[in-house]
Structures are given as C-alpha cells and as structure tokens.
Length: 513
Image (cartoon, rainbow, N blue to C red; front, side, top):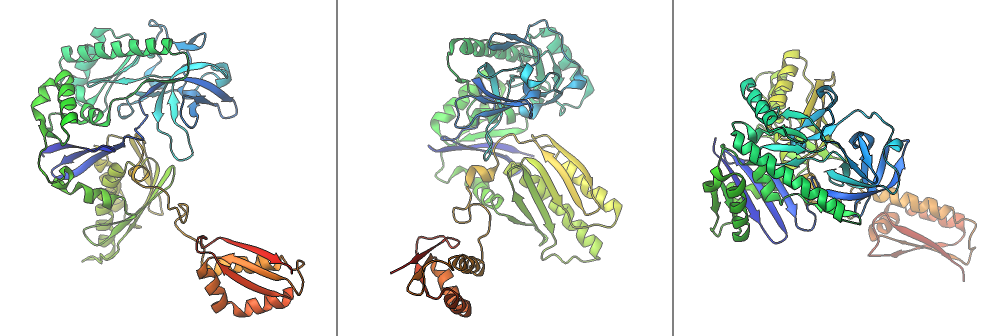
C-alpha cells in the first residue's frame, strides 16, 4: 500500500503526517514556542530528595522541577558531582531490564539501593528527559542516557544488546546481533526496526556517529558550570524521517524551501538511498488538503466519533487516564442483538486503535465495550484489538475483558496528546465540562443571606451582586423564598447585576444607613 510523509511548515509550527493508502496513520505537531523536550540532555541539580517516595526533584532550568525516580538512577559509580560508568563494567542480566525501542531505548530496573544513598541535595547530574511535562507535573528524567540514530539506539551508560521486537525473523536477528558484537561498542546498543537488512558498514557508521555525539555531550557537561541544556533533540521533521522513512514510503513531500533543503541534506548524509524520495510541494492548495488531513485532525478533537454503521464511541481524556465508551447509536442491526453488538464492537475496535495513535493518548486506557454474552465474541474483539495495535509505534499492553465488558490497557506516552497540544481547558468551566445550575447558585445565595441574619437591622439593606441569569431566576422562580428571607432578616434584599461575573460568582453585602 503506497505511503507518503507530508511535512507542512509554518512560522509558528511544523506538522508531519504519515499517510498510508490516503489514510492518516500518524501525526506529529510541534509548535515553535513549545517543542518537545523528550530526548534532550541537561545538566541538572538535585534540589530535594524524597526517601518516602524514593524519588527526587531536579532543577534542569525549566519552569517546574523535573521528577527523577530511583529506578531511573544509575546505581554504579560516582565521581564527585558527576555520575559515570566504567567501560569494562559487566552488564546486568537481560531479565532485569525492559527495553522499548519506541522510547529511544529507555531502560528500567528494579531499584537496588535507596535513593538517599545514591544522590544528595546540591549534586549535579547528567540527565535526559524521558517524558514531557504534563499538566501540573514536571518532566520525567533519567540518568540512563540513550542516543537514537537511524539504525541504532546507543546507550553509553550500559552494556546491553537488544534487537527491536518488530524484527521477527530469527536469522536476521542473529545476523544483527553478530554484526553489533563484532563492532565491540563501548556501551549498550539496541538495533531499531529501521536496521533490518542494514549492511554492517551502515551500522558501523551509525555507531561511530553516536559515539562522537556522546563524547561531545560529555565535553559540554564538563564545560558547563551551571545547570541547563546540553544537547537538544532533532527538529520534528528530522525525527520523523529518522523514525518513519523506509522502503514502504514512496515520497516525502515538503512545502517549505528552507526545510526542504534541510531534509535533503539530512537524508543525503544518513539515508542516501532514499534521497530521490524527497519532493518539493509547490501547488497553491494547502498540502494537508491533499488527503483532508485537517478534517481528520478536527474529527480527532471531538469527544464523540461516529462509526460508519451508525454506532459511535465517546473518548474522555484525563491527565493520566483515557476512557472510551462504545455505543450502538443509530445502528439497529439485521439479524439478532448479539450480532449487532459484535459488529459494533469490531467496528469500534478499528476506530479506537486509530484514534489512540492520532490523538497520542497515553497512560491507562479503559475501553467499555457493549456487553457480549458469547465468549468467542469477546475473544474475537480482544484479538482484533491486539491486531490493530501491532503497528503502533508506542508500546501497548492489553488485559482480558472483564465480566462487565471492560478492557484495561496501557499505551506508552511518547509525546503530548493531540488534545493537550491543540486545546486548552475551557476558561468558563475551568476544564470541568460543566457549571452549576442557576437553581443551585440561587440556593447558595439564599443560604449565605441567611447567615447574615444578625447583621444590619430593619433599616439595613442586603445587596447581592451576581450574574443576570441568576438574578432573573430568583425573581421568577424563587419569589416566595425571597419574601421569606426578607421577613426573616427584617429588611429588604436587592440584586445588582454584574455583567462581568461568572454564572457561579456572587458577592453579598449588608449596608446600614
């Protein structure tokens, strides 16, 4: 199936779309004012160690302190304020590690030493951002540095050798392993999916480049006297080509002359066999309109997504949780209820997998499928979901379906979600998605007035400043209540409309003559 990479560049942002068979399969959006920090390397200073959480806060020069978990700290050797590992140190067993290519070779270990014995406040560390800041949380960082190349991920602080799980042929996996071992790398190496079929010369050149990059990072760390950025990741368009450009891609279309030249130079240096795939887009029609990508992006920002059959799914995102609800909607089926439910769930599975990738949802995901009675139907839905997620660049795990038809899964967050990138919380409801009813606010006002019972006197006046709709509601629907309150207070209650007030906002004053 023909595939294309579209690179749309504007002064404020760059968007990269991966299109397969005229269907959007992946989308990366990066604003110039808020680029992703994942992969960037900093010199940080420990500002607080929390033994109770086995974590620490590290200042790396951002607005919020970064979060460092004990499992992300190298438990090897220290040299003053700098952490390092001897080249000849033996590697830990593969069973102790979980390596995921999609994160650039993130390595996690079971903590072996308490954090208070590993680092101390005021200490400088060489750290790399593993996750961007999210909501009120700062960036997640690690001391396990990983440098992604075209065919390899180089981990200079480790001695691990891994092969991408997407390279399935055992003979090719063994060849790649022997090729890397013959190069005797000073550090750990993961062969990426793009390394499948790569010649030993290509892998060697990639490793040599990453080795030089690591030495430059070390020199920059030594030269820098204060905390801050040492090495930043590539621009989004170059990262996309590094990760997505392959034999499957027919063309790479760029609509900006300067970025076109930059892309040409990058491909010519690192992936020369694909240099003829780079094309300059010069038509007046916007590039993303070729395949109605803007329409697809707009659709992926909606809470409700309609399915072709007439059913629909509802997607709600929280900070670390995504909930997906499947409904039959207008679809009534043709045979029986169980068949209608199965068809809706299967159609929903494909759309859910698609939406998770386009929206880049991460964290815990709960999918509420329509209840199915037959076990084979449940298994078919689960198997279809697993199949649809196979080509997802982010690591996913799926649990069995519960008796209530719920499926719990996780999806690794590799960049901010589409919603958090393009949207912000509603300024009126403050992101809650609802406001109090007028009747509720009116009841709160009445109760607060009652609390003024001992203030003023017969000659006083209670003045309520509030939204016009609340005042109208009180006069039209709560007139008896107002008469009761005035009788109880012994003086008049008046309302002053404040056009600038939020519907939930009010202020009460008692004025004496």
